[in-house]
Each structure stands twice: as structure tokens, then as C-alpha cells.
Image 1 (spheres, helix red, strand yellow):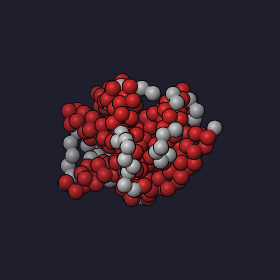
Image 2 (spheres, one colour):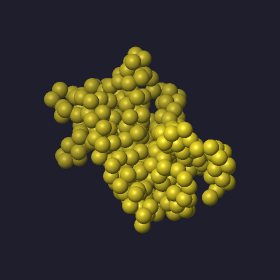
Image 3 (cartoon, one colour):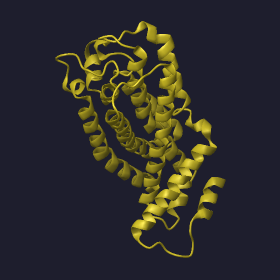
Image 4 (cartoon, one colour):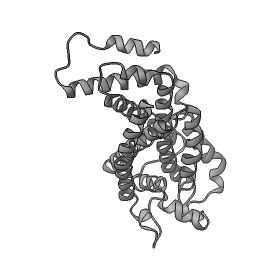
Length: 286
């Protein structure tokens, strides 16, 4: 147990039982979530995937590769790029969740939690809450960086709220993918390997950095139905940036990117959350 964990445990109320099971669950969930937030604050280098990495992608594609990429229908490539960077960063968010859970399994923190008189479900819920709050950080970083490099929003307040709401909805879905990955893969090194092999291609065979029309053959079809593409296109559509309107006779996901992204977010939660809980329960019994 780290000093942060010990400090949090000392902060826990003692001597008087919670008023109800629900109050106990919420209280213990917040204790676990606060522990995760404290770890992020005391280990800022662990947040490089949520802070430095997205900024590097923005600068790299905006100023190095951007001059060689044209946007169909015209418009600023920097404005086209930001929807993709937001989408990529959100999908990569599952990587941090998986690493945090895998680290807790290996350093004995999970075993320690389960020896305490707290609901077991509060451990997973605490991880989910901490990482949902963590998702705010890269979104804020990307927003500021985008404005600095020349990104502009041309839509109204309701569309802007819808865009940020869609980002948080998809971030919540990806948290459960991260919990599933962190429960199935026994070591942090294994998590990094699997994430690189599975997650990395998902974010690049998409409209993240280039229009799908520039991709060849089967890669184009995969990109058109890739949820990363639909999230990027939905954000471009809601921010009224280039690439937000699909060309005539495009596949359904490109013509209805907001609806398609919501369907994916709901489907991921419905499928991944039960699988993640089951995998987590098996991992703590093994």
C-alpha cells in the first residue's frame, strides 16, 4: 500500500456504520475514485498518454503532414484534424484504465481492497469514476491546443454541448473496454502489447487523420464502418468543421455519424460491461 492509499484509509469514517447499503456503495466508490485521482496528481508522468501524446499528434499532423493532405470539399486541414485527434485520444483512454487496473492487480492493492469491509463492486465503480474524470483532462488539453493551432468552432451552443456530451459518452464506453482488457491480461507489459496491436490499428484505419476516400479497397470499407471514424465525423459535423458532411451515396455511418456513434457507445457498454465484470471477478479469484 502506498502512502496515498494509507492516507485515504485514514480519512475513511470509522465507528459508525453507513445509513444504507447504497450510501456505503457510493461512499466506498468515491474513496476508490479519489485514490485514483490522487495517484494521477502525484504521478503526472503517468498521464503522458492523456496530455503530451495528443498534443504531439496535433503538432505533428498540423505542421508536418498537414500540408500534404487535402480535405475533400475544401477547408482547413487543422479543423478537419481536431475531430480525429479527439476521437483517437478518447479511444486510447481505455489503455490508461487497463494499465491502472493491471497495476493494482499486481501490486496487491485489489487484494487489500477485498480484505476491507467494502462492497466489491465499489472497486470497479471507483476505477470507472476516476477514469471518467480523467477523460476530462485530454479533452480540455485538446480544446486549448486546437485553438492555439488554428482550430475554430462554427456551430451554436447546443451543437457544442452535444459534441462534448458525445465525447464523454464514448469515453464512458471505452472505460469498460479498458476494465475488460485490464482484467484479462495479467501484467502491465501485456496490456501495453495487446493495446498496441488491437487499439492502435483501430485509430489509424479510420478517418482520424485522412478522409476515408483516400484509403484503398477493403481498408476504405473498414474505415467507413469504424466507430473511430464515426466519432471523428460526428464531432466535425457538430462543430461544423470540414469533413462533417458526407459526400452523396456514402455508407449509412458516414451520413448519420452522430446516431451511429451513439449506437456504438450503447452497444459497447451493454456488451463490454458484463464481460468486464465477469472477467474481473474471475481474475480476483485466480
